[in-house]
Image (cartoon, rainbow over all chains, first blue to last red):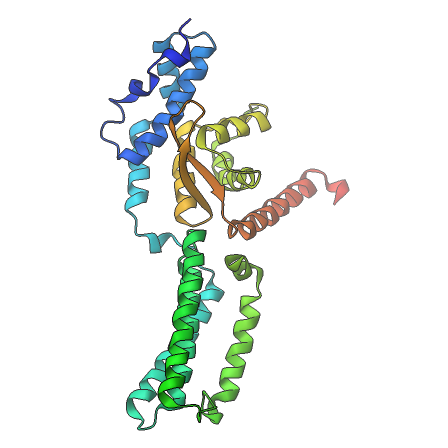
Amino acid sequence: MESPERLNVGALFRDELARVPRTIALELEDHLTEQVERHVAGGKPLAEARAEALKSFGDLAVVAADLDQLQRDPWWSQLRTPWQLRVIILGWVGFGLMCLSRICVEESPSYQSIGASLFLGLCGSLVGLGLLRRRESLRRFAILFSSGVGLLLVLKSALVFGPAVTLPLAPGTLPLVAAAALLSAWLLNRPVIRDCFV
Amino acid sequence: MKINKDLVAASATPIILTLLQEGESYGYAIIQRVRDLSDGEVIWTDGMLYPILHRLEAQGLIAARWGESETGRKRKYYRLESIARSEIEEERRQWNTMNIILARLWNPQNA
């Protein structure tokens, strides 16, 4: 019986995996090689072990093509952002844009600037948290980066427009904003979203 | 008895996610674990696992890293992301509901 340690089984599938992208080929090769090693360790000749491994794997070309296609799909089409989070993001982004549009037309834009900065910071955080949660490390980066940018924007607005400004929003809009904040807080507390933040 | 193909396909995602709850793993080991757990009743074609793993990775439910096997081969390891916990819970609810419905239909005296 051939010793698996002495076999160069990795090269056994070179032909089958020749046209497969490198990272996919490496993963499939690892699988097939381990299968062959087990068969060989169980007493099967190498050629038979190789044939068995390929048979139990199924159609290698189809699987490789499927994996390749998955890698080509745009990442945003594969995200599973909960609808509640989308509602929050769209709502606050819309609000931030509204604040910005008011800045552009008003002569004294101080409080809107601060408000817009606050909400754009919040939007950035939410977008970062929601959309970049494919990787936890990226999500952590998004939290720190968005929070930092949001804080800087607020500080800059406060410095530019002076400490005399105390209200970030016009009084007439406060009930609407308070309702939106409550709705956001409720949605953010839903398990499906809460898990995004853990 | 062999489990039919549709049922195997439908249960693959919750099985993979729940297995990864036990800890980091890789393709071949996942298949072996499923085989052991089902006493050989559930036979996955090895190749069917990888598109599911890659899809779950793209969806952010699992994450992958490249490491080395005991023999020094490059190996891709998968681990569960925290977001997947609610997905597992949802799958658990759905499968339990189906289980209850079928149990009531097949054993009306227990309904």
